[in-house]
Length: 200
Ligand SMILES: [Fe+2]
Image 1: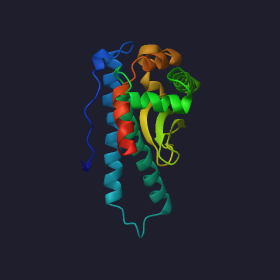
Image 2: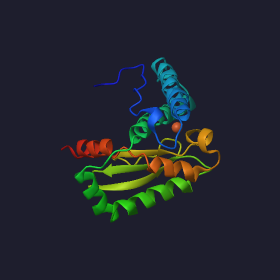
Image 3: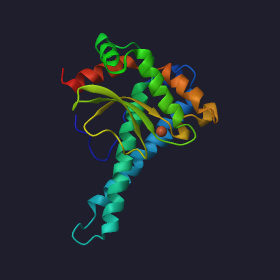
Image 4: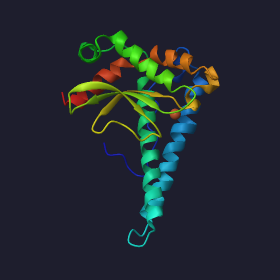
């Protein structure tokens, strides 16, 4: 279904009261304030873009609005991928086999993904498990400022490493947040998304 403008919040896909090791308060706050804030900001930017006289607008106005549109739009999409990533469930045989093929084993994949998250602790950014159709493989990717998804790739899991994701529950202990995230992976949904990304 085509998303209409103004952009609307996608309903929370996980049960915020049932994420082991994370409070309902932080999940709901993250959803309402940070995800909701990105959607609200995107709609404000879209309104300015709609009113822009492209022939006469200064280049810094065009550059600024399009940059901020990119940041807000990708923040919206990555946050949706983040909430979709929560809710412990099992990987399909297909996803398990793809992870084994591309990382050696599930544990090796998880160790790499978690280490990338912990490496961003105290900073900000995202860690994504993405399907790259170019090479027909899964890749763990790093991204900053909500803008650096691998070209053409589809995120299957998204770990938000901005401090707002964990500070309320974990303080500065970003590593404990990453461990909690890894214990709550919605691998069933990631499996379905892999099939969709492969066009199966
Ligand atoms: Fe966030």
